[in-house]
Amino acid sequence: MKNIKIGFIGIGLMGSPMAKNILKSRYRVKVYNRTFYKAYKLKKYGAEVCRNIKDVVSKQDIIITMLADDKAINKIYFDDNFFKNIKKGATVIDMSSVNPKTAIKISKKLKKHKINYLDAPVSGGTKGAEKGNLAIMVGGEKKIFLKNFEVLKKLGNPVLVGKNSAGQVAKLANQIIVGITIGAVAEAIKLSQKRNINPLDLIKALKGGWADSKILQTHGIRMINKDFRPKGKNISQLKDMKNILDCAKNANLNLPLSKIVKKMYNKLVKKGLGNYDHSSLYEIYKKNLKMEIK
Image (cartoon, rainbow, N blue to C red; front, top):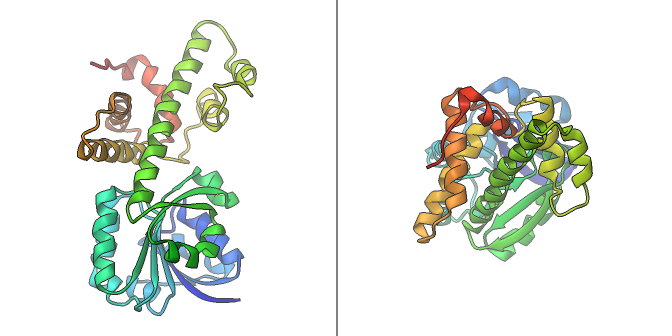
């Protein structure tokens, strides 16, 4: 058993396999989730299951959070039971995907309490979380990054991209590519089907070429099979697209493709598909979901 003590908050689709990988590396881990039974499932892997925020953060060397959005993050980080019970010199690592402005606000608050902070959002979906090969974009001080590198390495490939909030900006850049590419794959598959090409043959034909990608190979298959069980939810992609456009606005930058994709995901969420996988963007081409981009 390794001596570093870790508290993990947020045992959902991503958080559960991530916490499990840390436990498998024989770290001492406390876990907490608002829905208790989700955290309780990790007890058999050696986790100490906590019923409140105070217990999961007290006396821990590292606190990792993996939550749904800014609202959930603010609820945790600005609860007195959170920061007042973390020991000085500990490191908080937020691996959620939130607005860079939220990361800056958290960084300043924790610094006042002499608590270290890294924003370290991830990409790779549930498959990457399970396999421990997530892309991890980290913002923070280099010495804090290096100090916590070993733990982050258990979850994937951590890369320091800049100061606090830079990790969140990098994740937004990632989500621009993800969102637009899912849309491109959906249109390519729909075109092939309309012109009587088997889309599975299309994916095989494109393999190894410039149009090939993980998204084509994974989300493309999900579209063909209409398997929209959530690996990455539409509601989360919409949240990211909103944060992308907010970040761009603050930088006086116009992102026309991102605006279009945001409208498409907004349409899906309004139609009740918020909890479907983001590959269900394919469904936008159904007649009852038809939309005009003006």
